[in-house]
Amino acid sequence: MTGDNRNPKGRKTPRKKRRLLGVLFSFLSLAALVYIAVTLLSGRDLDIRGLLSVFRSRSPVTAVEEFDFDVGRNRVFTNIGDSLAAAGTFGVQILDIGGNERLRDPFRMTTPAIKTDAGHGIVFDIGGTAVRSFEETRITASIESAGVIISASINRNGWFCVCTSESGAYLSFVTVYDNAGREVYKISLASGYAMSAVISQDNKRIAVLTLAGEGSKITFYELAGETPGGVFDFSDSIILDMRYLVSGKVLAIAQGSLIIVDNGGNGTELYSFGGRRLGGYAIDGSFIALYMLDYSLGYNGRLVTLKDNGELVRELTSDREIISMSSSDGYLAVLQNEGVSFFDTELYELPPDENSISAAGATCVVAIGGSAALAAGEHSAVLIRFERSSSR
Image (tube, rainbow, N blue to C red; front, side):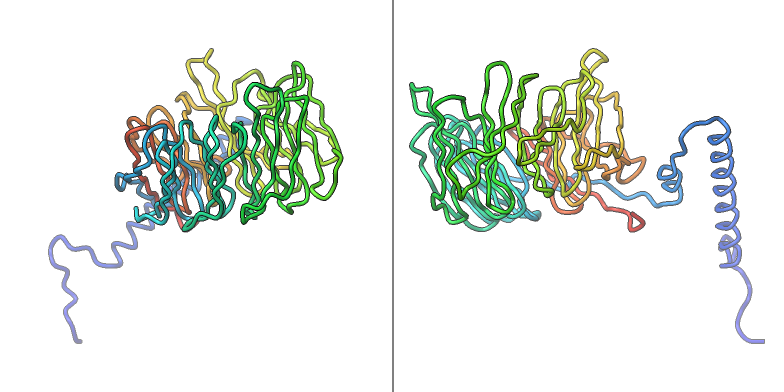
């Protein structure tokens, strides 16, 4: 016989370790079976995802570092590709997820706004005249509008449109530009105030939102034509915003519901808020996430995810106030009054059972890449990372 089979004091043999692990797994399996039996007998819904999380290892969530955005006051943030974009009174700046500067363009704004779609972005001065379209590492167009800017938007091809008004006149314009900043289409609205406009993902048409009496109206224009096309007249309440979806239809965000509108002007209610106030929304591919607030119940928040065909994925009620939400790469970053939490599209927390990361002073959250978010305020911007479980 060769070798030494003696077991030093305090050290378990591999067989004993395997035996302990087997006992632990058997105990967890028995507990799982008891849970399933009791749940089914009581008629309650079975939370399989939550049950499986028992067998998964917990993944750490960590606040990594403070990011230094030097863009002045009134800062607004968004994601673009795998980077973070910020705009302020001193211009626009982009940092990658390591905090390295990828773009800086200094110019003056009073009320900055910023929007992105895929790898393209637009920054503009509401009430001013400055407009910049950009990618992660370069400015693609720099424009000074003839009128005062009301709003602007950009599509995933880099085409953008700007809504402006003439000072002292009830006249508004919607101007469409290609991805190089060349004007390709212009609409003059002598009646109806142009609130916003969006360009379809194939660059063939534009949807214009105007105020109409006590309601709103969305009018579709073919960029190759002269006359308006379909019209969706919504007299019930005010439409606050709209977005073109990958389906080719427009998602209209009204005061009390989400509405899908096709290019012929036919609208269908997608989801009703049920008397709650919409706090915000995010679109990630073919799913829509939104959060609502119910102040009558002590600032309760409700998260909702649904597919762009109206199919409800899940609703989740929280006793914490929801402040901001953002989506990226199949997950949601949610800023609540106790900090930042992460969820998948079915609203199961990532990682499960982890505590929120404190984000004192933050007023918005921006999801970035596949495993991080920026919690930002007027004076701070902290990057928070989490590790996604391989089983998800």
